Length: 100
Image (cartoon, rainbow, N blue to C red; front, side, top):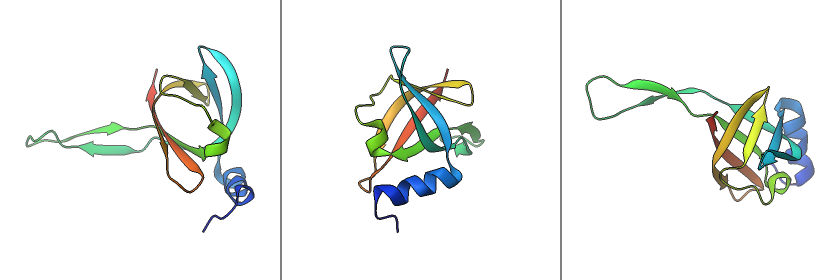
């Protein structure tokens, strides 16, 4: 179990990537997080489903204090719009992203 901010940072240093958090196009800060854009199946109540990606970035809540929906995050030269900010209550926050 991750107990402290230092423990969280150690985990992110091992597996994380850098993301540039911007508001109104201006860099606020660079944060370390775990980026994922796995395919998920979407069921639209038909006989044939389809797949879609849902890009996500998990980082320390303290690193993105004040981040809002519609801020942007750039990961590996790709810009994403932050659609949802979801703190998990353990000191980590998941950002649900939309590719721009």
